Image 1 (cartoon, rainbow, N blue to C red):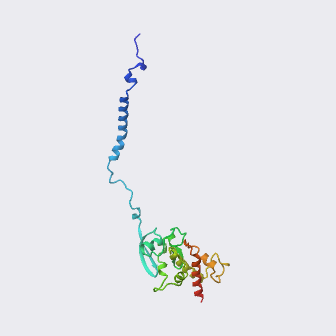
Image 2: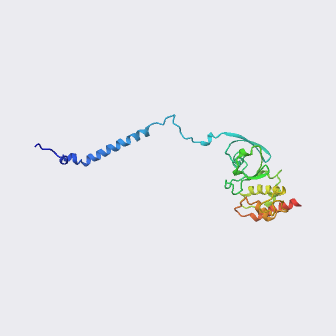
Image 3: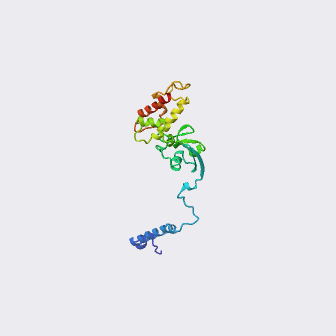
Length: 232
């Protein structure tokens, strides 16, 4: 009977590859697997390949916005997403209006739009096309302070002054609202104009303006003084 060789008894070189052969095989396999990646990294970027824009806002169209600010006409080219606050500060260069929280919580950006006080950080400039805007720069006339400005100085109704422009605009509108008969949450009977502006009325009507220095008692005193002058 012819002799057959079992596969388990094959040559030691075949059954047990040497350490050198193993390392050579592993190195060759690694080189083959990384070659496509290296080739891809060396490929030049196609001129037709889309590249991300470095200035996304450049594509936003501009539109003309006409405003009357403190009695002067302004025509600005603005993006539709520009807030009234940014339009006043960055385009009209009226930096008296302050950017505080930029989310309608502090009142530092308060201005008067068509006789109504608003937070300019919460509204878009395009929404006020053709309107009349009054900022803190427009409260004084002919180098003469408005009554509320003079009262703030007399009663020391500010400290750091950052919130003061918004406080002044809000107090100015408050007095107009009271003269027009507008009620507030502190009015005993909202069906009727309050007989006078009590301290509670003033505090409630000024509650949308935060003073982080805590000058609230002096602010109330300043407003109360102007109310008394108007009655005289």
